Length: 427
Image (cartoon, rainbow, N blue to C red; front, top):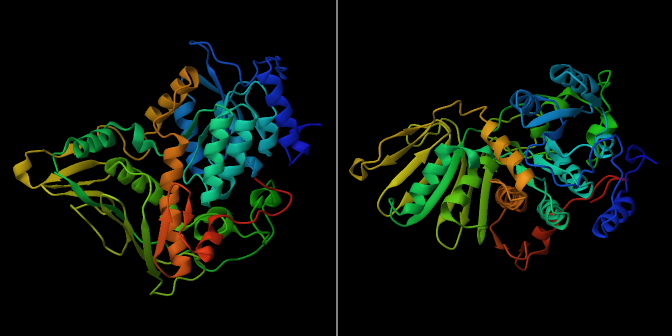
């Protein structure tokens, strides 16, 4: 029975794991190597792309020209997208609608997951269980329990799991964080990030799904609702699948903040928000702000109209006792001028530069080292913004035990750490 016909993989994959641990060679299925076999230094990594929309296409454009990897499968619940991606790749690439058929293939070494956010955890975990390395887009999850389960799966099955926070692989961000760590700014006691408000989606218009879209599979573990183009193309506006710019840009920006202050989790969280212009159709507040208390610094997240710091309409800041740094993907600026640090600019295209991140991922598939944006980093950055969302839901300040990943003496808030999956899907 193929994985396409199963939703509960645990028995099958447990058997496979025990066989591998005992040194029993697994079948190569389609004539390739077993997915858990170590690659030779010069072997091309065989990849599958799951999710062929906007970000999926960006990955595709960067991966196709590579000589150290090849795309052998594309997959999307909207099959025309998978077929278009297959045509772009050419050769023997195969297109699928159901990701489980991709995971069934023993000749695939790694998968790229660029689906809507609510699918990231299950596909990542099942890919690890199928002995595939994983590149998963941010946010890694929609709940903190899911994110920790992803980290656990990566460690249990010895998988390389790279998160799509490509700033970790960009020289500009590496240089900025190195400067913060150097002490040039003095002791950093405050940091944060900012971006514009959540956009206005408009009224939802339920209708029949377009030909070629498996709406049931698109929803997956999320609650069943009728199809609407707004849910398909503006899924970030709905909390069943995402949490607006808080979990979109928030993970990118707050990941760099955590990197810079060298901490993993806050002690206290307080968030407030509102839609003061009556945004129709959105689950998200249009404007919001969050404050986090860490052991060594205060951290903020801001979504405001016409906001700018250091002349930048979005970005990251670090405030130290001797100076401050503002940065976006174009450059970083250090003030005051007496620190004598000139503006440092990004040399490439800051928006679509995923190539260096891909290189790091593919190198780690060979070396089995942890990548720049290891799943633990991605989980911690995702947790940051999810904590702000829980504070918004609870309407009050929350105290957080980052080691246990539980709120202190607050069972109401702890109920938000996970969410039920629609049958038959489960972690």
